[in-house]
Amino acid sequence: MAARRSNSGRRQAYARRRDMDSQAYVHGSVAAKPEFDPGYHENSPERPKKASKRVRKNRKQALNINSAYVIFLSVAAITALVVCVNYVELQSRITSRSKNIAAMQKELADLREKNTTEYNAVMDSVNLDEIRERAQNDLGMVYASPDQVIEYENPATDYVKQYEEIPKDGVLARSEKNH
Image (cartoon, helix red, strand yellow):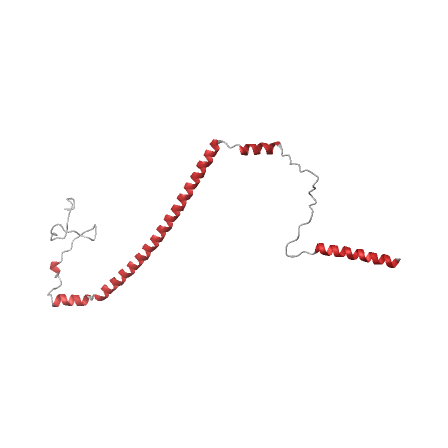
């Protein structure tokens, strides 16, 4: 009899293992949904949850929108849109002007470099000794003698515009006090 029990116990254990193995093994990468939902019962009707008075009042107010509020929101949205468009346009102008400034600065640097190169070339080509020699020998020019040089006092500036002859004594103007 003990042998019988052990055989029937073995069969039951084998059947249980076989059932567990077939349910526990999952094919693929997604787990299978259980056959029943422990929180749902077919016999129990679903009851809607009751909201508190305050929640119902807030919901009712949210559904009732005043026309003045709609106009205010529309004006605010249009104003925000205009401000954003103006901002983007201003940014675009700033970018284009900064590119223009950079191009002009490059052009200025190139012109300054060219000007400096030309100036150095002209200064290197001029030999003052040759000019003095040609002026004295070929053109007959001579240095001024000391009696041809008239010195005068000009305290204001280094630049003189001559409207009339310079007096022999070299003084352009005198006040009556100093005379």
